[in-house]
Figure (cartoon, rainbow, N blue to C red):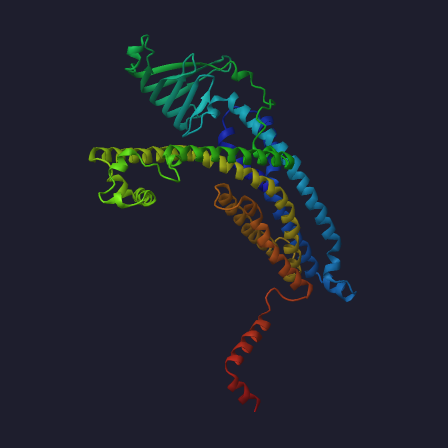
Length: 483
């Protein structure tokens, strides 16, 4: 836990260092954030502790004494199996209750700190809200307190909440005072754009705007509301990491119903826009089509004429030739425009649909990870304990190397499957369980080897199997050897 907390410090040090934040606030944030590290720490801890403990017992011939007294390895592990079972139940309780509450606290604390410190609220490469009517994007922050900005873009909302003013500058500087609620933003070498509100309807269609270039421009932002931030205030409550099992079940059902409704409505809307819904199962023959019936068809019955016209409608080339040239050109242009508009609509909706799928996958993944963490602790014990009994080494040498190696395999598989599950490439249920399920046969194999008092890999038995295989391929040599 100590190592992973230091990793968290290095991860968030850019946000807290040099921002005049009290150590008490930083310590409180790390305290709230530390339970989120348990899913990484606990499996490694169980694996390492079991390898070290059983390795030390085997190294000191304790297992040999137990076996001489008639105590098998499975009987020696019985009390620890009960302990690990209780630990697994406790882990599920911790993941279901403590981790969501800690995530809730750490997220809101970090959010309130960002509001209290405007320089922290400005993210590089994305738009950030400063105050009530400023949205700012910068390419880079630098300087002693990250108060120097490069390539600044500001959208300022008007009284009606409309985005009518845009300001761009090459450089910028945040100037503030502890005793003042006013933050100065000094911009250098930039341009100013503003849409002008036309009074008459005729001039409104011309979209008038004002443009100006400046060498220096200062904006004053009122931060009186930001300075009244309560660091303990809790507003955000609905992210998937903050929910327990029952809340996740409810959220998953709601998201599934909403997604099904939205996808169905969108599909029906696209279907209607293509015009395919207007196509009848029995084509309606208009007057113009009847006039195009070839001469000599008068001898045909009405049923035969209907069948012939239906065949014409089934063939696009035959159908379009029933119209004049200018009408054919219009129909082709209308079809192309319909396809282009449909494609544009699909591309525009793609991001929102993918976002909904990813949000649903996040909730399902978070639900099953709570169960998978508990089972992982139980299964990794059956990987570590037999492995320690087999290698017969205790301490922090070889057991540490083996434990870290096995944990990295488990951890990397877990990360890869999680990423695939989030974007829908893999089922989120499978993504949460793959790493644990892969460790299950390894635990069974090692437990059987240790219970039978066999080495990790029996090279002698392997050579015997290979020799028997080649003797079966050459039975003549086997008979000569017997003679």
